[in-house]
Amino acid sequence: MSKFNKKKNGELPAVNTASLPDIVFMLLFFFMVATVMRDNELKIKNELPAADQVEKLDKKDLVMYIYLGRPNDGFKDQFGEEARIQLNDKFAEVSDVPAFIYSERESKREELRPFLTTALKVDKEASMGIVGDVKQELRKVNALKINYTTRIGDVSLNKKN
Amino acid sequence: MAKRSSPEVNAGSMADIAFLLLIFFLVTTTIETDSGISRKLPPIEESEEDVIIKQKNIFTVLLNGKDQLLVEDEVMELEELRDAAIKFLDNGGGSGEDKCDYCKGAGDPKSSDNPDKAIISLKNERETTYATYISVQNELVAAYTSLRNKRAEELFGVSYTEMQKNYKDVNWPGSKLKLNENITQIKLEYPQKLSEVQ
Image (spheres, rainbow over the protein chains, first blue to last red):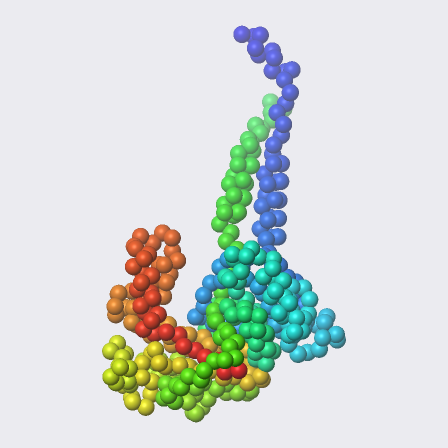
């Protein structure tokens, strides 16, 4: 029996796996922190109004986003104080909306195109003028399904203080 | 006795625990979906014939540039809008062909004939703030939803909102086909006729 016991001293020590949890935790925290699902960097103020009669906007890949709002501080000199349109990462004019819709449509599979929805993410302080212009453009290109994206809450939150 | 090392704690299972947590978070993290009020814009049709609608079947809501509300030529607060809309939609003042036998309203012959004929017309100005516009939209949708809820409760014993939730729920045990029929029936009885004036 002493034959077996002797061997112990010559064996390689087991690899220390004590740091493995740390690595995994690091990964865990990285994913928890880094998971921000925002495709576009906003250059405008975009505080959504509240509403409670809302429907969920499922199927994220079938949604086109149009942002409207007052330009952020860094862009005020260039673009002024009035509400502006942001498409993808750029400021845009009302006349750019049809081209944007067409390019979005082009990027989707043909059978999915009728289900495309336009989500209007409009800042609550924006005036309806520009919203109406955008809606008119959308009608022209036959993008009729729209969704006014809102926060969920009572409408009394929308009142000015 | 001097050199007595304490036994090392086995940390091998720590990794498993961490992985378990990692997988738990990966699976349960549902990415927040946006929600909002869905609307359908009217298509542009030049050669549209003028449909004659009786004045009493139109409920005009006007929002001016100072965010004030004018409903049926009367100034109104936002809080009253929902009830006013419900009163108008559920009036059921029609007779004969236009009779509405499920309406609970006052039956005023000067107000709408039936929910199918009743149209809410919303007009806003360029200066209206978006927040107010959304509030008004929300109240009008709420009026429809509350009428539909009431009617569904009466017919099927569940509210309309509940029915819609069940319809989307994959684990709901009942018959989806029947449910869809019921939902369509409610939608037909109280159709959302909201027109926006450009």
